[in-house]
Each structure stands twice: as structure tokens, then as C-alpha cells.
Image (cartoon, rainbow, N blue to C red; front, side):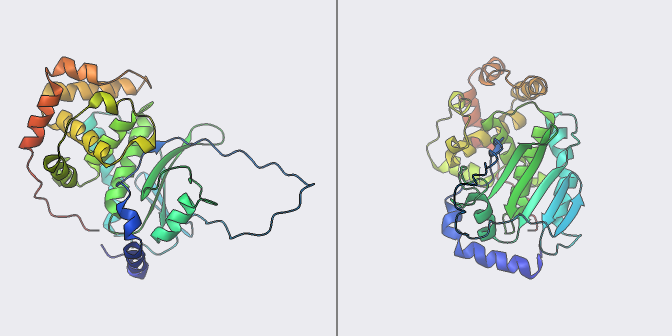
Length: 305
């Protein structure tokens, strides 16, 4: 999709930083970082020498669409297909997962270049989220003064933008109606919904990689993960595979997942999902393998970028 001259600059930056991008998995994780401690003034110490200015968030313009407010420093076409996502994705996510609609507002901070985004997020000296592994997009649920949480998405303009927005927005939508989402399930569902509805939840890159390389599923292992750094590309793929199997294959497995999501509406720790899945499916690993072997690659046209 057209993004004006600013998008062209972002594309050039993306090419120059491609090596770094290839090392990062698509999408991100839902995490709740603690607020940094307030600095304590020490008048007896000399002031430090001035350093480089801290990077700032986009905020020249604010565009509200659906459940999102986009903050950006460049012009965006109101008819841009990007804006369709916060208007249509909530119905898709809540409808397929049988969840009640949420009413939270999601703030989307849209940087014009990868360089500016990465400096704000990950710069080792001034980065706001420098303790987190580098990802090209992030969702955070942060404590709000007075109670509640602020739902924030950070990303930058590039060919990945619409896919990553869907991925991160899925995290935000789930966070808005569930007490907690286990890390693997959060990523599996985001991978399932990150491509347009015509894909029927099929992620071609994940499916191709799972078929070309030896794959030994281990849901019990995934369910133990609770840190972002534990999720790499193989774990993202396996998380997607389990979600797609449960939503698109055996009705009993689908019910196990949907019932588990209902439990998460009121209970932040209902235990692992695997025992429920074993009650619904005699051998989940074999069922998953058979399901992956039978999936057809989507024929839907690529969505406009």
C-alpha cells in the first residue's frame, strides 16, 4: 500500500539494516515490564556531561481507527488499508475464539524508520526497553497511574507492517479480556491471526519450515516457558501449529482450547492445557503430525502493504 515518501525512506533503511532484521523472529511477546524507579537527585555530585538526546516517541499526529489510536510523525492516508485492521480484526479474534468483545483502547506508536524505532526501544544506553530481546514490533501492557493498564504497540513502517500490526493487536485484544495468556498460547494465537482471514489461520512460512525440518512437538515444554527470550523461531512455529490443529482439526480438541480460554477469563492460572487436550485426543502428537501433513497452502492473494 502507498505510504508517501516517508515509506520509501523506511524501505531504504530496512534494506540497510536487513542483516539485523533477519535475526529477529516476526512479531513479539506480551509482557508487563515494571516501571523504572524514579531517579534520586544528588545535589552534592557534579552534573554529568550532556549526552546525546534521548529518542522520542512519534506523536505529531494522532489517528483514531476502531480500537486503536495511531501516533505518527508523517502523513498517513485515511483510506490506507492499514486502518482496516483495528476495525475488523477484533470481530475475527473474539468471534472465532468465542470471547466477549473488549473495550480497551490500544495505542500504536508508528516509527517512520527501523533505525529510530530500534534506538528508542533497544539502544543499550537510552533504550526504553533495552532489557528485552530485539524484535521488529512489540506489545506491552503497562501499569496506568490510577489503576488499570495502558496497552501499547511499537513498530515501524515497512513491508511487514500490516502483518505485525495484526500480530501485536491480537496480543492486545486477548490481554483486554483474559486475566492472563500463557506465553506459548499468546504467540500461537498471534501467529494464527497475523495473516488475513483468507489464509484460514495458515502461516505458510511456519508450515513450510515444519515440513522441511525434523519436528518433534513437545507441548509440555512450551507450557513451561514464561520469558520472552525462551521463544525463538522453532517455538513460534510449534506454538502456531498447536493452535491451528486445535482450531481447525478435531472438534474435541477445539473445545478443549475454547474451554481453556474461557477459564482464563476469570482464572489467571488454570494449569496447563495439555492434560485437557489428552482427554480430548488419544495421542495429541500424532494428531498434530497428521493435521500438518494435510494442510493445504493458502491461495489467497497477498494483502496490500
